[in-house]
Amino acid sequence: MDKIVVRGGVPLRGEVTVSGAKNAALPLLFASLLTQDECRLRRVPRLMDIRTAVRLLHELGAQSEWLSDDEIVVSPHTVHQCEAPYELVKTMRASFLVLGPLLARFGRARVSTPGGCAIGTRPVNIHLDALQQLGATIRQQQGYVEAEAKRLRGAHIVFEFPSVGATENILMAATLAEGTTVIENAACEPEIEDLATMLTAMGARIGGAGTPTITIEGVTSLHGVTHEVVADRVEAGTFLIAGAITGGRVFVRGARANHLRAFLEKLQDAGVLIVEREDGIEASCQSRPSSVDVITWPYPGFPTDLQAQMMALLTLGDGRSLITETVFENRFMHAQELARLGANILTRGNTAAVSGVAFLSGAPVMATDLRASVSLILAGLAAQGVTEVSRVYHLDRGYERIEEKLSRLGADIRRVKE
Image (cartoon, rainbow, N blue to C red; front, top):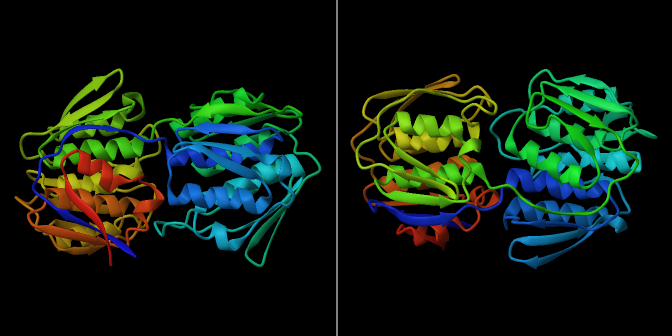
């Protein structure tokens, strides 16, 4: 396995271009299953999770071809089976999103229950209850979900909480359902809007995406599309913190401030200078960050996927910060690894008290999940000495060539074999 070696203490300066969002690209790839026509996606990041999604499409019988580093065309007319096997789904939770499209187009689907990062239970019952309301027959046996429906029927669905995955699954399924579907308490993330934009370009009739109430008028078929994936707001936020935590100045080209409003406000509260431009966002910090309290919340609140990175910044804060995690119940595993670098963090339940220290010191640390991985790299960039981050296969699920991008900003960072 690889590890990332960072020699800290170098202020990062320069410009970096944000990649397409993994969390948008995955449902977009699976949405291609709703049509027989070719679907072309641009600005697709080359990540482990994307490779897993493409392998799953191939397993179902679809064909694909990379036309460039970030452009892929999917040909779904050759899909001949409706089973997503455990071997693939266990490695990436988003694989469960093939359930809705397969069921809507073929009337049946058999999908393994999902795996992914160990940051919480994230039950799939909300997906299954909603599909049953659309008229599907659901059975769970031997670790698989088996669903059947001659044709789905529109329904009024109220989610018990705004699940992103369930919103995406039901949004895709409802495009081919008979009649009108209304989803209340839907997730509002930009990735939901991006999915709805692509589906609408394919011929779907969707209103309200990006709000808590989405209305879908079912159609009989969808056609092919060319679509560009929305910018990755989590990657953008990560690079903004990289500039701030090192006392540097980083411009993230392609970052969209309207997708990061709650996050940017907290950075400014911490003393980070934020400059918003039409083509991106710049962050700089010339002094020790101020301590701030953070509560993660579904969009448009502070993103849980930027909580670990914000914690890394606040380890150097002037004072005591409280971070409350409300989205996932097991997302402070990075705290004990940050402590190995000298951070002063006390966790209790879903709250972490971060007492800022004057400096961090490099040490060997171990990544426990995707966002934890990058928080340790950020801390290592600011620490004195050398930090070695092992188990970076987590990192490769969500960040495209991050060591190369950080190197271009001046970081002393390299990837080596363990």
